[in-house]
Length: 360
Image (cartoon, rainbow, N blue to C red):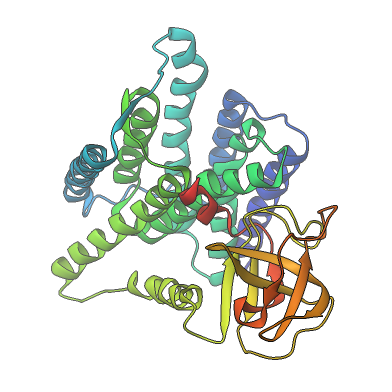
């Protein structure tokens, strides 16, 4: 390993440890984080030099940012026409600006300048991974301390609203920083900062769609940028397209047309085996069911996931008495084998909350 690579990794490692410790014990306010970024930027520039901002596409990309936000607000307005609008309480006090908005403006500027410096010297895979992880932690270190983590659903809500959009923004900035410099990304982030805190009217988006909307926006901007680069450099680039293949695969799995089928748990009647918001994998192959099997079945146009408590003969075929593990009594009605959709193979915690948010 080159000596410069060693010190680069050492700087990032110290920064990652420092940010990680703040997750455990909160000691980084907005202004303390600013001091930390200033010191880190000074140390990094002292060791490796200060790289001048790339101005090759700067004006074009600032125009792209403005056009992108014009499209963004137009789309919000159209969504509001169909779903309705809601008023948002905003604070116009000077104390709110001084304690939150002003330090956030400085944090965004410093963050993007530092990101450009770091990625300008990230010439290997290990350096790039460490750099990416450092800025990902930097983006979450303060929001985590204001998050509600009192329940599993609240934790997943934080992940969906904060972690996933932050991850998509890191991918966007990682892909564009070296080519466009830090000015366009500063403008992009400042737009979001003022929109989220000073825009008085928003469409009635449910939590799931709000999270999905803000997760996909950076990829949309990245796709627009790739088209621009393709035009400028006469090279066609479709690197965002592979992101759609996992989405297509999961849509097929959730469709129910295959033997194995994912289903979201909507109640806590089977705790502690699985809880509300978990996803279970069903084996839809019709086979013999035994006492103790957990099955999903139709019951008055709803799907219930309970354990087979006993087997009883009935007029048509074998019938089953079911019971939820968390329930004190068995289910009121018997079910036949034709009512059973499939047997639960295993469960995955948390990931079904977006589906519950859609139907809530």
